[in-house]
Amino acid sequence: MAVEAAVAIVSGIAARSITLVAFGLDSVIELASAGILIWRLSIELKFGREVSEGAERIARRIAGGLLFALASYVVVAAGWSLWRGGGEAFSWPGLAVALLSIPIMLVLARRKLALADQLGSAALRADAAESVACLWLSLVVVIGLLAQLAFGAWWIDAATSLAIVWFLVKEGREAWEAEEGSS
Image (cartoon, rainbow, N blue to C red):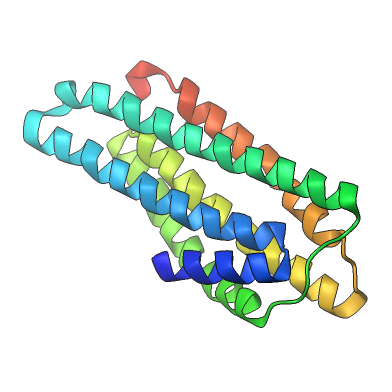
């Protein structure tokens, strides 16, 4: 994921692609979320389920906050791109990393969701939502880059990136407001 993040962010900056940079930032967020989740699960292993409820609450709130941060970036960057009337340039490395990410994120998200259900962990569910967001961003990057290449549609990157904001906000809110008993 670190390589994915670096390639996506560098390619996104070079191509002026909001979705490609957001995709890279989402990879960084996923890494941070995974680290937080490892911390939370290690608390449970060390001290038991009751003690880990506080860690679960902290972990899911951080995961939710990270989803809100990504949504904020997408809205601001897309708005700026549409306002200035300029968009992305095509990026082969960006297209490649997005295409490679799609099957990986699909499998990863499904496994995390299944495990979240087994453990009853809202924090792991929020982490899985970040993997789903990465999957959506991958698809949006591919659509945006191909539309830009085929039609020169400079605005498509901003428009398609805004399409996933609803998901990021919904999942962030669910993580933040999860019932204490459901963690």
